[in-house]
Image 1 (cartoon, rainbow, N blue to C red):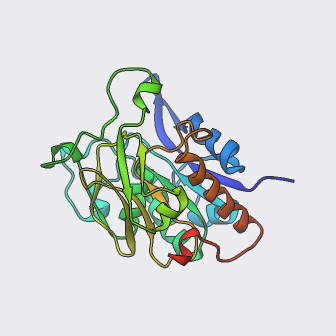
Image 2 (tube, rainbow, N blue to C red; image 1 turned 60 degrees about the vertical axis):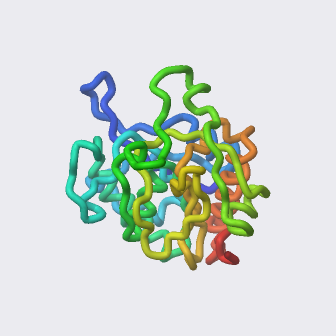
Length: 259
């Protein structure tokens, strides 16, 4: 039997600084295939090649991945500055309406890092361009040097809302996570529930209130070592369960329905 299909949102990328490509990290596919138990398929997220409606009809769920480009500040009513970094306007044009459509339909998605930020912006929220420049905040960016193991190592605690969705999912009120991001939530969007915070107050885990489907999103990178990490595995397993429910035609079916 064909596994349920998860569309992995790709990023625009230049190979050798000149050959345009759509790219997706191997660890995203590994987490979807090996932990969520679904078929991972890379989406060239550009409205020149596909539409949101086509994506909704083709896939059973979506993984909104991380990526170096940031959501353009025009999408949340702010002026572009040097601090906002690089952008991928084609991805903005696909993912932001895709998130809103999935929320309305109850179609599952899991947001990671940039994907977490996209969910907030899609629901009307705003972002800080650089978390480390804020008073009292730590540097959440990826270490510039070291092996992949060192860059994705667990670096800080995330404290969950007592009895909330993520607390129940992880079976613990606090978990250790990696951190590889520069931006973060400034103002939460409409219906965005901040369900987990880093020790410096940075939002790290969210969902969409009263959404009929799975909308869990995290600021860290759970795709790293997802099969073995005690936080990543239940997150991807729950996402896979939601995707399978959608593929079977069950409507709606979201983890946060009882929250």
